[in-house]
Image 1 (cartoon, rainbow, N blue to C red):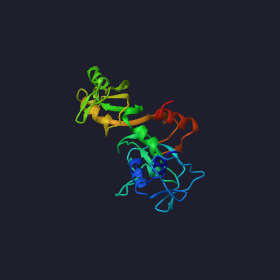
Image 2: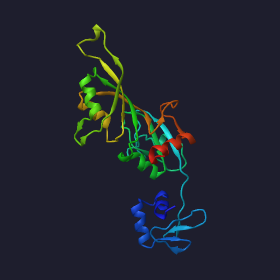
Image 3: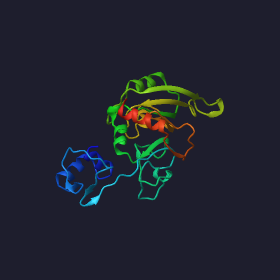
Image 4: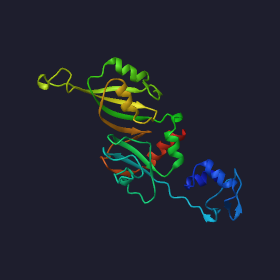
Length: 247
């Protein structure tokens, strides 16, 4: 393994930051100053920074079905419950991506920084599938805008896969025309902008009532109750690496 990668995975910073540690002569391998570009075998060699041994935590991968009202953060200075609080891990894990406070659904938490970075990078087109209920009946014109890409303040979105999976209309006693109507959509995107689904639908003229992510990078929330977390299975971990690294 490349020394920079080993140091980064041990939590000593980005790969560029770890390169700077090596250039500064602060990293040693078996007591000798390390050089850029070398490889290291942690099983047989001792790596230290400023004389302190470097060790890596065991990699952990957790799936969480985030409930509404839980923050997608590692910690909160206001004492609110976070997704990390929902995961019974003995090592420090962090969420991969975000769901806003009023959204629910599948989240991955891990201490594998390289994998997280690949999953979040738009270059790798990791799929995210959402079940969204909005106010009103969504017209074909609005569906077409979502499918082609919709203009937001931070630019045009990539085309989304959008399917209508349910509609509800009020009875005559419900009041004014259109009051209480709703549409449930299945939306799949590859991007990960902040509050992207909500902003897309608002731009198309529909306010989101509920939003749940049920799939992420080939993983599903099937069998996972709200607030429940579990380790990834070997098959799921293999699928996750396939999504991130190909092959």
